Image (cartoon, rainbow, N blue to C red; front, side, top):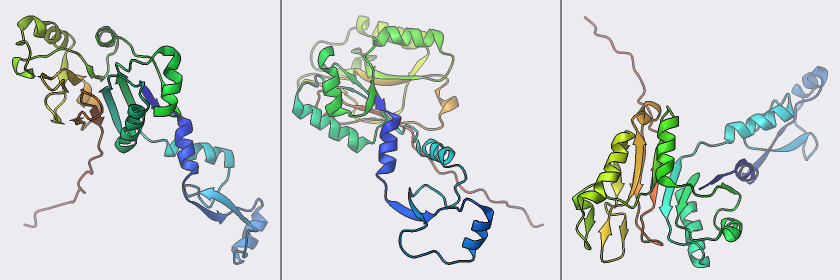
Length: 262
């Protein structure tokens, strides 16, 4: 799993267009004097700052830290994707471009087939300056989270299981034994599937089509998040569909006061 580090956002912040503003004089008398004078031409009396700085700077260090806290963005998109291998440089470049287009803040890659000793190099090519962690077992993690976390949470991934007969076309017919374990897991830990748009079948080998990748949430999810948008995207580089979980901001209608004039 990968996510942006704070250094990335600071780097992006410094790359923004700069402007120049007046530096506040250190003494009150100088301040009154400058208020009565026009700003001098040229460089004297000015300092380069980013566009988020203000003209009145009292504590430069505090302002610097506060600016980065203000600019540190929330995660807008989470992606889960069974990429079926990341050793190919061509696939690494494709994944990197995909993440840039999605503007994602966190991504979980499944079945990368990258050896541990090569992981740092691959991460540097695909997700430079991101934090990353090794994959943890999916099913056992669901059990642990459900038993220990009394808050809203969700899980995205390749469960390699179907829930209903119609979730596979081609190959062997779906048996009840295939569905029962996964169904019991969702029931026992009170997990529900997000409403979604996009592909219904999330995996194919061009002969069999199956729905085995899912985005699930617990019953407390919508107590915390007003609106969540899930998209099962086209497969592209992999035989699995990437799952994106978005948190769009919906503008609230402006409230108006109305009365009945009797």
